[in-house]
Image (cartoon, rainbow, N blue to C red; front, side, top):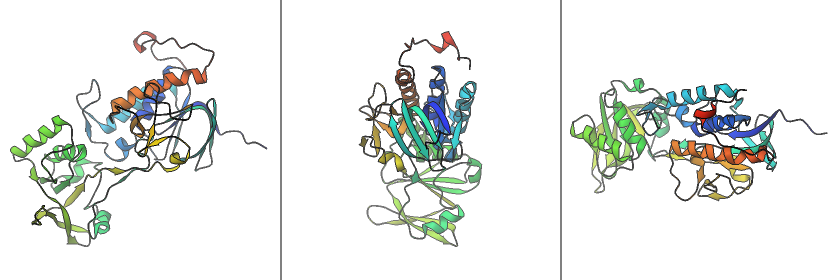
Length: 340
């Protein structure tokens, strides 16, 4: 005897980060019903879980917007469509074909969907930890942290930031007026950050607001019972220097684990899902991927690119859900938000 699905929907969206939320909006604008599923207990993905107070500078019409505010705005944008959410769930299985997929979650729900959008970001993400002795003891007390949820937690503290990417640069700038001191440890003068923010960091260093500790790498942690007193860094010649610190923020990127997605028979390219650029469809018809999890030639890992991909995927899905209905594209300024 077959069991009826617990949810029946046009589009199942796996991942409720920025790209997933905007995909729900684009589906709503095309009168496609959708459902958001996320392993986290809240929407927003990394923006909510890792850095809600981090400013984002490349969202159109927002010279700067904090990640948490961006998610709040995206939630308001989909309010007219009353999009249901299954949070704290992981999609374990996918079966069927375009027009008739069945998804199963780790909590026992089954979802019938005509199409699937995977907006899983970095998948099951976790920080790349530095190989330092005694690290877990300092992690347990918060002396070593990999994310900044509240800038105010660092007020008056001596902060050492390690890394050379956007997170390291952004948080050095974000904490310089709050922390007692900010030192940035990097193995070379060149940073892998956006040129403008890298230039701002250079200006802050010249003004004495941030100290650049270059070329050095992390070597050891000093302290007792998880209370940090200093961080040892080492240069290429083996010279060791001690930096007095209360908190270490190592920003060495996130490790990516697609989890069950990797077993669904989709074509992979270096732990990402390969998609057709024009539609964002994966190697399995009816399953689409957008945002950081998707890859194709010329792909840029920007939130705004994920937004564009969400629109392309939604339009490509419309004929799957409504094969006999021609889609006449209209600008939102002309048609407004569809009534429920």
